[in-house]
Image 1 (cartoon, rainbow, N blue to C red):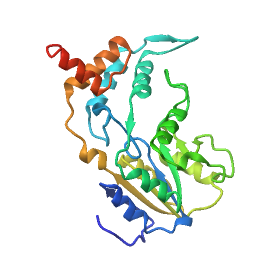
Image 2 (image 1 turned 90 degrees about the horizontal axis):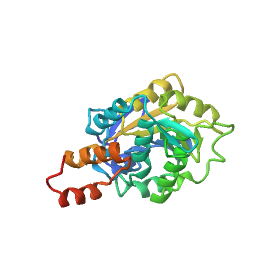
Image 3 (image 1 turned 90 degrees about the vertical axis):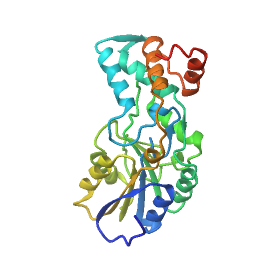
Image 4 (image 1 turned 135 degrees about the horizontal axis):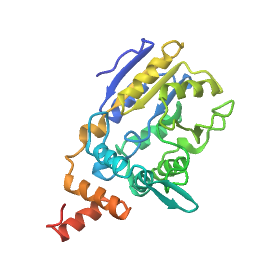
Length: 272
């Protein structure tokens, strides 16, 4: 999709690269535009291959997580003074232990430079509270953004005119709620009205949800379906993925790709 003159009230386009996103956002007036970025698979992604799924198609990661939910249904584990569902405990081990990296080397500088011209806000389906061994999901995700070098998380004091608990350090945590509905509440709390909203997400359904929410408002909307991670993902080594989830279920720890590769290389006959 090439450069276009943005006139429509609502539009969704595809962007296979950061340069494409840059082209689209360059057409907007900075002071009247707010740009929302999903976190997972847009600003960063897990390093381990089985976790690097992006999009809405059937995937190997989902198969294993569904198996965890089924196999450990009704089971709990003591965590301090509390008991938590075993499936939540195991999935939280993956969330807490897995390392992340930039989806694209160019995304960091682009977002930090864009934040000097427009209002940049993170917009994630992730939760913001306690989950399994993770004491605070919001703090975990914000620390990852900070460690990678994103600047927009530093201050939201001038952004909102009232309390909006889902927004922490300029990142909106929807806690799995519909992104369109959560955004509507966020817009009502902003200090100023924006003429343009740009939303970058790897999931088309989220872009459509926001589009439907904004259709009756006098706001220009551009949804950008960012597909770079999906387009460049390597073929998954299922032996490694199977071993990671087998160890997770048995020993309650998450091993990285490199750790499992070393294990399988030392014991080549024990891949299952």
